Every structure is written in structure tokens, then in C-alpha cells.
Length: 252
Image 1: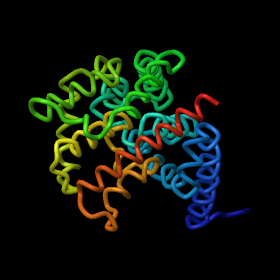
Image 2 (image 1 turned 45 degrees about the vertical axis):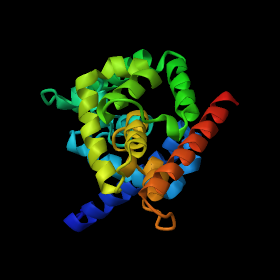
Image 3 (image 1 turned 30 degrees about the horizontal axis):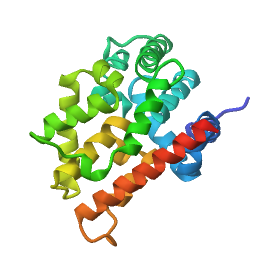
Image 4 (image 1 turned 60 degrees about the vertical axis):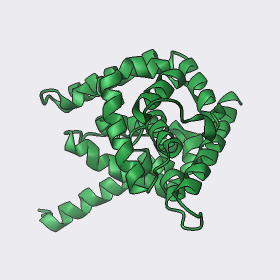
């Protein structure tokens, strides 16, 4: 009779996880090919590993729920589960625990409703919002009044569907996080702070730790640039280039 020792079971489980990880790297690369090209395989693998850990914390251990969770990370941002702007869409993650497939289905329905209401059935609202991000000069970010009110005005004007969906209270919570990120990078200008807040609004509140957008924190840590203000201006230029490329790819 064949006896498999505990260490062998662990080795088999690890081998299965490695295969699943590789399958998901390929699946997500097919799911979002242009984003995958920008990220590269190493960053995509990093996102998959992070997602498996995050999903398991919510009780998702089967292939289907895990894959769905990873797709949402890529589509909505790696930290979509804690994003204040997505609290309604992800309510199933904070509901009473239930069987994982039922919970994953409820999460999917919430995210689908968000995508249809905010992005539009053909992503038409999201495309207009991307063009607005591309077209705003750095110098035009500041305005009259305090930074918080100006940020909300930019949010509403740039992506009104998302603003209405999230609500002002949730977006003010996002601004608290944006202020912490600005302090972390030593950004003290209104324009720089509003840029950081706008990226967190557009790409997810975890954009500065998201493997999909590593160019953002890398720019803000670039020691070759003179100071935080120059890094913020450089980040603005990189954001416009990134969004322009994304729009071109979507149109082709």
C-alpha cells in the first residue's frame, strides 16, 4: 500500500499552487494584454501571488473564486477590496460569511453592476474620463479654495459617474489616504497633492503599491530628479503618456 508522508503532501500542494500561479499569469495576460505588456511577467506574477493571499483571506480557495478575484484586481486595482470608492461594489466581502462560490457570485454581481453603471455598457464613460485625465495640464490642477474641495471638484468633473456612485463621504475617506501618500513622498504643493489624489481616484486607492502601476511609485522615488515637486511633474507627464497609449490601444 502506498503511503504519502505529510512532507510529500505539502510538496504536491506546492506543485499544484505553482501550476495554478503560472496558469493565472497566462490567463491575466490574455485578459488584459496591453496592461500585461506594460507590467511584464514578473510584475504580473507578483500580482497573482498577492491576489492568492488576499483572496484566501476572504475564504476563496477554489479555482473559480480565486480566478475571479484576480481578474477584479487587474480591472479595478490591486486593493479594490478596501477602496472607499468601491465599497458598494465589494459589499459581499464584508457580509456574513457564506459558501465561497455563493459569496464570489455576489461579489461578481456587485462589480458587474459597478462596471455597467460607472464605466458604461461599452466603457464609454470610462473612455471619456481617461481623455479628461490625459488633457488636464499640471498647472490647471490647483484652484480656488481648499485642496479637499478642489479634489472633489476634479473628481466630479473628470468622472462624474464614479463620483455619484461612490458618494462624497467615501471620496473624502480616499482623500485622507491621498494626504498620507503625499506626506510619504514629501509632496507639499497643491498641484502635486491633487495629482496623487487623482491617480488614486482613477486607478484605485492602492495605485502606489499596485504591481500594475509600478511606474507611479518608481517615479516618486526617483533620486535622479531634483525634488518632490519635479517628481510630481514627471509623474504627471508619465500619467499622460500612459493614458494616451491606453486610449490608442483601445481604439486600434
